[in-house]
Length: 96
Length: 74
Image (cartoon, rainbow over all chains, first blue to last red; front, side):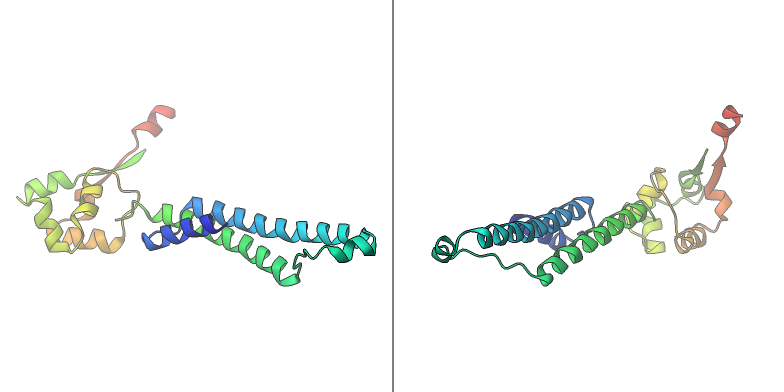
């Protein structure tokens, strides 16, 4: 996810962030964020179904939150904005 | 069907080079080259007005419509 973000930042620093690849990268980041939330939900579900003795010995947890899900959804929206931006950029290319 | 750019002809008639035209109209040589070689997808009216002013001509002197393909299809 950090590599994807670094590649997006690279395109921005080179002067043209509105490329189709960035829309795809943002989509992937949003999917990964949602997957983390989903894994967290499943993990919490499994942990709560374990007997208390076993449960209390394991201290791993995931932070599942509405803000995490909202962040993923916002990044999906941002990906669509970048896709539209890259289409507009392509239309403008070749205009003198 | 397509729009043909006849900038070459008008530059020759006015004894002007593309570089000189670029300096006169404040458009980059790269963009004028794109226009001259027919690779431009669109032209702004401001660009067209500046080129016509510099070459003392009308848009029809540098642009033409070629509907040959349409005739073939009909």
